[in-house]
Structures are given as C-alpha cells and as structure tokens.
Length: 82
Image (cartoon, rainbow, N blue to C red):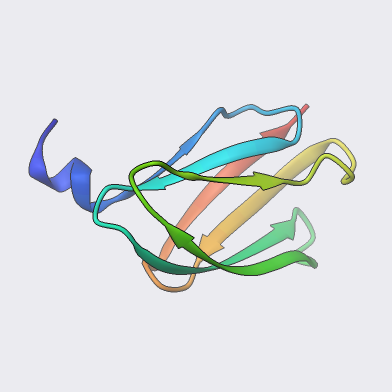
C-alpha cells in the first residue's frame, strides 16, 4: 500500500444496505456529518477512527444518495444506500 493511501480515510462497502466501515490508518478523531441528497443533516458524530475501523449504522434511513463529510480530514464520500 502506498504511503498516500495510508493517510486517507477509507470507507466500505459502497453501495451499502445501511452499515459502513470507516478506516484511517493514521488513526485519530474524525467529526462526521451525513447529509441526504437535499443537504439535510441526518447524522452527526465525533468518532475515534483507527486502522481497525469504526462501523457507522444508518439502516433506519431511507434508500438513496448520502454524503458523508469528514470535517477533520476535509473529505466527502458519496454513499449509495440500497
């Protein structure tokens, strides 16, 4: 694995049935915001993400496109919930 890849957040599976795993090989605290396709905040959490990963569950939300934003890393993931 390249060094650049180890510094980034990794999210899987995508598409998902409502549960995703977020991994950060550098470790650290992440502030996460999940918004729907209309920009409405549907989930907010501060988590300690490590190489072991953290599971985020949003099975209760309807199917559709969501955007997971890490305000700490400045990254945005497009998530397709099926």
